Amino acid sequence: MRPDVDEQLIGIAHILERVVAPAVDDAYASDVLVGVTAVLQGIANGWADVASFLAWDARETLSLLMEAEPVLTDARVADVAGNARALAAEPPMPLDTHALAEHHTQARALLARVAPVLPEGEQRSRVAAHMRARVERYPIRAQARMPGQR
Amino acid sequence: MNDIVSEIHEGLRAWAVAETGDADARIEGLVRTSAGFSRENWVFDLVSGGTSRPLIARRDPVGSVLETDREVETAVLRALEGSAVPAPIVVWSDPEGDRLGRPTVVMERAEGVCDWFVLTGDRPLDTRVAIAHRLYDRMADIHRFDWRAAGLGAVLDDPGPGAAVAAVDHWEDQLRRVQLEPEPELELILAWLRAHVPTSPVTTLVHADFKPGNTLLTGDEVTLVLDWETAHLGDPHEDLGWVTNPVRAGEHRIPDAWQPDDLLARWSARTGIEVDRASVHWWNVLANLKLCVIVLTGTRAFVDGRLDRVHQPPLALGRVMLDMIGA
Image 1 (cartoon, each protein chain N blue to C red):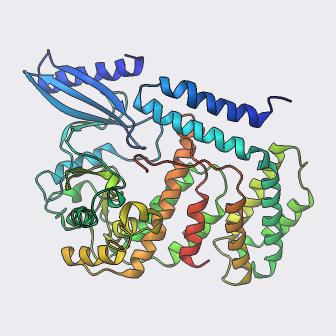
Image 2 (image 1 turned 180 degrees about the vertical axis):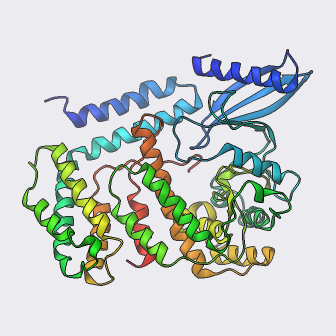
Image 3 (image 1 turned 135 degrees about the vertical axis):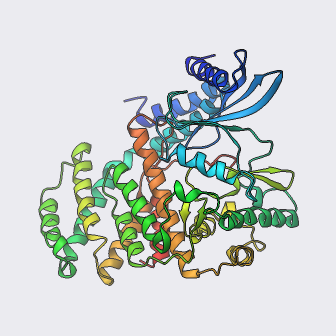
């Protein structure tokens, strides 16, 4: 499959930079084009890791929620560990990206309910550690540029 | 001239004729500038009665990173006219969007240079420190502004001692309206903010986006404070938390010469208000939550096809906030 997805995305970004950008006189359109090109490059560098990131993040999140069950004493989240177990028992097909995204969203929704009421302690620290770890592993990065940034 | 420029040109010309009474009023040099993430900025010259007047029209975009009210912005700017705070002069205002299809404020276009990174730029150190003094003295002057005497109490809500609660309510409400997916990190931060709300010592006018990039410099003088669209009444610690936010250090600090301690001491001396360090820290966290919601507002507008810029999730800000609250 050539050009593959990486090659097409990177190639389009280069075309925009080399061919289109020099021909754009309008300041606003030129500024927008710089941002679009940066995003295309970011997607090119990271799209292939999106599925594995979603699967890993959901798996870790559900695991943390199940382990947190003894401290989830707040009535508002009493069902969360059980729901996490049910979700973890039916992981999506690894190549079905839409199913992966939906499964990931459901896991994150459970964590969103728990995060505000999780008491300070080991479980909360582990959740916070995972929140930091997923920042490092997030696959798509595009450098935002502020006006006038040197 | 493309369709959108023609449309704006015609709208401005008709508006100019109506406002000036001059049937021959002309719009010249109309250009949309790239500056700003939240408004469309159209610069032009109004030619009428043998004179040319440089103006700027700030029109609400279809989608934005901020959702604000032109009527409130206009009221604040008109209240500030003639005060110690150098703010844009409103020429015409159309908060209903009758003239250009969307709410628009036309202002005088001032001379000056906008430099987001003037404090870390090429000027000598003592000049940059002097500019920092002038910049943040203007911010202190906003907090010294007598908003009651200027009649702003009629158009802005005074949250009183509960300004911090009002701010969390506002940004949580905005988050709920724009979020596309669960945000556990922000839920954790919101819970921390609500558990630690400070009490406001005094109600002042708050700019809410004060930064070098929202000012104009003429030479080394600060001649204008821009972008009043998020101005409101509240706790002056909100602006202090915004400008001392570690994430924005590159804009607001000069290494080894202008740090938060310097800024807070100078601000306190100028305003006569004692700085509450714990409150500044709380507003630092709120500042980053606000930045996250602004990014997510832009994301929502992009996904809905209303914004021309793509934002990635504000993950790094989430990590910063976790560090700030000791999670």
